[in-house]
Amino acid sequence: MVIRNGQVGMFLTFLMTLSWYYLRQERNLAAGISLGVATALKLFPGLVLVYLLFRRRKAFWPGAIAAATLLFFSFSLVGWHNTLDYFRVVHFVQDYYRDYKANLSLLSVFTGIAPLARFAPILAQVAFVAILGLLLYTVTRKSRDAGPVTLDLEYAMFMALLPVLSPVSWDHYLVILTLPLAVLISCLRSSSIFPERRWWSLGFLFAAAVLAVPQPFSAWMAGVLRLSRPIILLKLPVAAVFAVFALLWGMRMHLTIPPSALKFPPTRSDAADSTRSAA
Image (cartoon, rainbow, N blue to C red; front, side):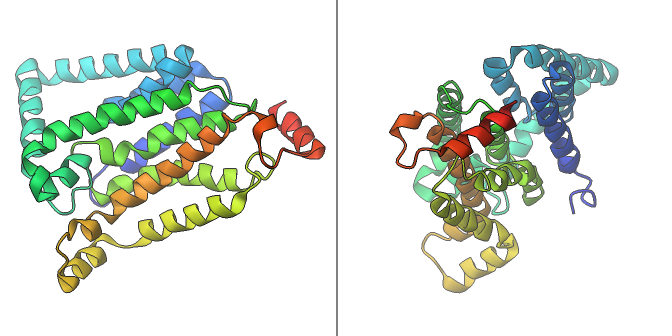
């Protein structure tokens, strides 16, 4: 559906996943360039550049330079008049589609809540700043994991929120959740790092179940049930995105707990396995 609709979500997902892969391989130049190209195609992946700025400076600079160079080249190619017209159209599209039921952005969520509709743009900006602050606070906390799990969770957290932080977002944006969901599944299999897997697994099943509900079906159910707050059903994918993020955030914060304070400290064999994987 993503390709049929002429959207680049699948290509963005590929480029951001490629950047994550290169980060795991300590290939910072390639990681930055991959993310820079994704940002030049669609601006919202630039949020992940903020993560690189705080956690991987050697990858941030190639990414920022690649994105800036490609954007400058494209704007120069079409002319500054068309560039200014593009930004006017972007502003128009945000205002025009912000009350659409199928729009999955936070801006649309606040617009759909009648008492908050007037303040939706301000609330969306405040929420963006608050979420970004939470992300930066989380990734700057010390982790007890010396392997790649910390990188996986942090990168996936930033990536998971992209569909709802974009001012206009549709269901085909949800393909971006491919890597965050894969990271969750991988972490659930790591019993040495997350020993109490039952609760994490229940949270994952809830997120997957909400994400699996087709948006047309939830919109139909909202009409049938005649809910006083139909936005609860109309924006189910938004709830799924935040459920995935909450799991990733919870796992990353779990890594901030020192081993001595864990209820179920890792066994000697688990610690050895973790050391071998880190090596």
